Length: 244
Image 1 (cartoon, rainbow, N blue to C red):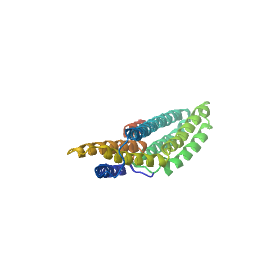
Image 2: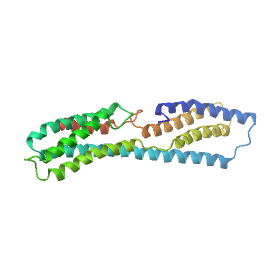
Image 3: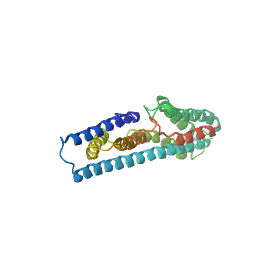
Image 4: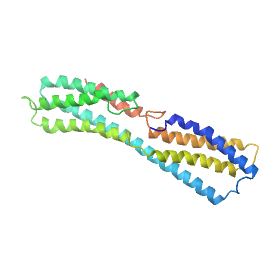
């Protein structure tokens, strides 16, 4: 990731400086008179860019939550279908499922990967043990048809989640967002009439833009800032506690 959400707070002092630079350029008369049409175009494009990036980030965040819920359902379904196996094979597989769920819960405090090595190892072990147990005497005739597809879904969803976490807009979109933030500050500063309390408007504009850009980045990269998936992650905790 190029930008960390917390680094977006550096945008605030930069915008304050550019606003002040625009005001001083206006006082010195070293720049052409402002054009309302150009100002409107710049601010309009900036507003559209903020709106689209914010909307896209929220959509991806919602997808993360849906995929996590889907994984919880897949693990729970596969765990329940262990009852189709012979009784002597269940305890080992049930313990493997507990360990597997624990490995997925470890993602609470991890931001660098979505599939841990332990998770990948347990996926292979669970698959081998389950396929072998499904063919043993005493297994339900439908064990192969019901359990193995459920295990396949449980394994596939981890790759889907990893790909979803790695899908972000190109870096140029975020650079463009920062460029427009600074450019809009410069234009706004040049458009401001000299006034004793102009600094209040400068701070308000810089703060509003900075908080908006920070929120976009934080939503785009959950677990790295104030915004996370903690409420949704509780579903994994509940699932683990239900595996008696």
